[in-house]
Length: 325
Image (tube, rainbow, N blue to C red; front, side, top):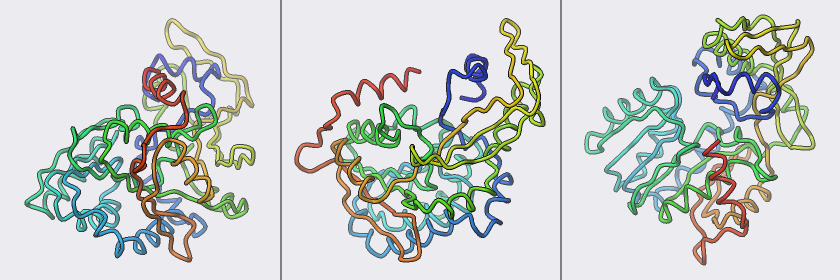
């Protein structure tokens, strides 16, 4: 994580290229520039496809007793995405918001508590990708919206979201995952849309607030996003604009002018590839929904009804190693 003093010296030496970006560290106002950009299509497309999905989801979700809202985000996101889904979970008795941003987690639980007085609500500040929650056999819905799963980098060629999903469904065989994913591969549209997304600038500001005492200054770096055709992903980058020395006390790190670091990714997959990865980890796409004017697909995923076994023999080991790291 970006506030780990053990991590940062190694990061700036270049040992962690492509690490997943902890987006929850960004304040809501840092996204205003992105949402104001008419080419930043993701929030609009996600809501379009969710609206298309809602009429069909009720019979699939009505027996869910526990709802885990993983990274619920801002109050507007909770109202526009979480609440319409919870409305469909007729048997819901428990709701838990999990967000690395404590304010987001607490606010989401408060909004749900006001709306549903018969649902017990809980909030936790944690990274659900590092420690997938368990329900001890209760029928659960794991709500992962906001397209955050795309920010987990590949491990041994498989996008991280599927390693995480395998771990989650293995621990919760009766669980269902409702998530969104961007299937757009139009490079021109991607480059226009992400040109206004201030992820890198927000990351730099957050790092300066954590380790400014080392000599780190956000103004000494520029942030930009680029399309990686080989990986099928947007890569979030920062580049040093001058020679920088960071003094971590027992560790002095020199960053040369022009040095580029990859601080995060946003993976894009066509629908058939997404489904193929779900099958590979022993899962099943129960249903999928996409508005005709949207590139974002809403997927409902569970364990495969036949065996639920992964055809990747290394995947449990890889997930374990990622968590320990």
